[in-house]
Image (cartoon, rainbow, N blue to C red; front, side, top):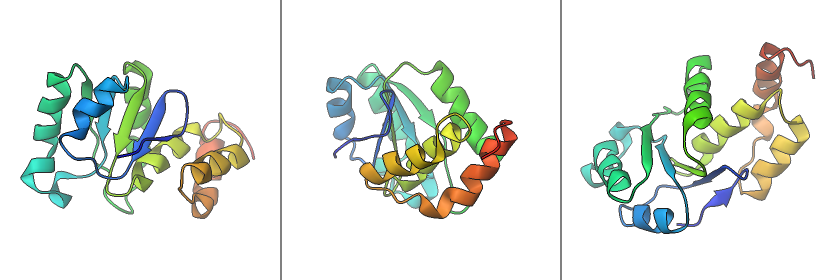
Length: 146
């Protein structure tokens, strides 16, 4: 498990193991977000197990399942609400970290320069170039014309 930093307040990674929760707490992460739906994992990696481990290690926990190909305004709004109130820094994960990084990118659309979103994601190992039309659309919903 190697956190990939997208901002000072948010890092992502591919699927973590239960024992990684203690390591994340030791690294200073204060909130854990699971974006991988329970239907994709075994019981050992379920949101219920991860929530208990997060609590055991003094971390806040949020289960925000992001089903492949199902990016919605509500999903982004829920992510933004979590990020607004969650103790920082926050760590998010899914199968590969891509969906977690997509939520970050969408939440930054209209606030951060589009090229900077793409560059930051690429530096973390995620190709967001296919999201450019959607990022532009999200930015326009925030009143920023790109």
